[in-house]
Image (tube, rainbow over all chains, first blue to last red; front, side, top):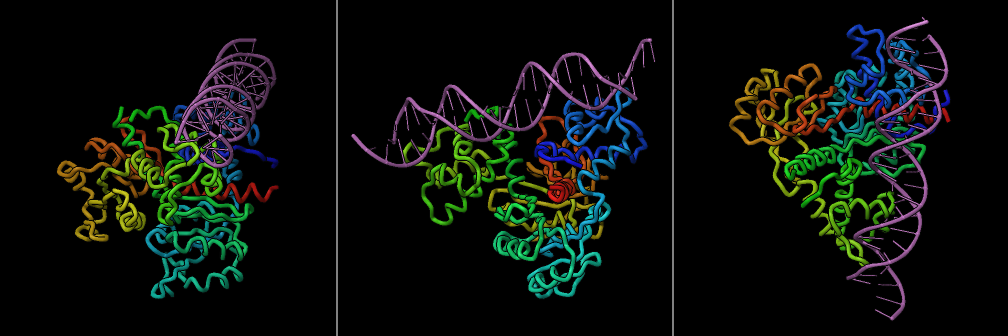
Length: 211
Length: 211
DNA sequence: TAGATTGTTAATCGATTAACAATC
DNA sequence: TAGATTGTTAATCGATTAACAATC
């Protein structure tokens, strides 16, 4: 498996391919051509073939792609064949929303614990997941094998928490705090900046009216 | 204000500029050069100047950019000088998280109502925002001036709710459901697909290990 | 005036699309 | 074999970076 130098644009599209293939699979479709998939996904067939060929020849001339096989392969590329243990920092609404989202688990992302600074949340559970005090974060990480930390906390404490996570060996952070985390480059960060997303929608509304 | 044909890449970066300028403003910085900003934001100075010049000459040779002025101007480009009334479909954890997020209000996004299909939520409020039954959606939209609908519901009902929204004249949808909404192109959609974001993080973890 | 820094053009780089030979 | 559709190269398009004249 020697994929290297795959462009960000391609990676960004992979989960969407995965979603469409999953739906095709569920509706019993066995094979699909890049042309047919391109119609459904509203991208060019050329792009689909180019994207997939970054990782190997998954198709067959004259036939197309086997839906099940391609679904599994993209899953492997995305690392969904592996189990990932996750913790969530922040047990507010957003943290709870993430904890309650069962779909993650079916893709191998298992939420093992949550952390919050509010003393009154200590000892509670969300969908069976225990909520600990934030002061226990370091000792918890030392005793448990966690790969991913989701940060669903306000920006004020985010940079410091991120540093703690990194010092405890966490290599992947899913960041919902409205700030950039400048971390060592061996630490993977995926940002979800909701306010920026809302602003982009606002821009679209605004620029559309001008036409 | 004749901005047209602005590339998506530029628009995607605008909210980040806005965030950095807001922080500079709050910390009392009055002027900044593209070079200095480039260091802080980890992008090239060239890109900053190119991006800003899509909208007009906001800077001054030999001086740089006035932080306050630039902040205001980008705010106008993003439509943050206007008020946007918003509703949230789905009063689960995610819907509540959005409703509780006060920052949106300070940027002009006012959540006026929430809707859910669970009868027991009817009549409750979230941060003072009333939760109505989903059956009241159409009549509510006829009687109130709403610009944005956030959809924080599972994918099952999403396409149908989106159609209702559009038929009631909604032109901007902030979509958290894990599905694509194929709507008329005068309807603006901003997607937040959390599971795809998590998969990208997983990809990064996975591909990093291979090196 | 001298120094700094923009606005803008030109050069480079990367990503998308088109085309078609290979092949199932 | 004929038809279909991939894998892959070449052409196009767009976005980023570099360079520098304009100018504050």
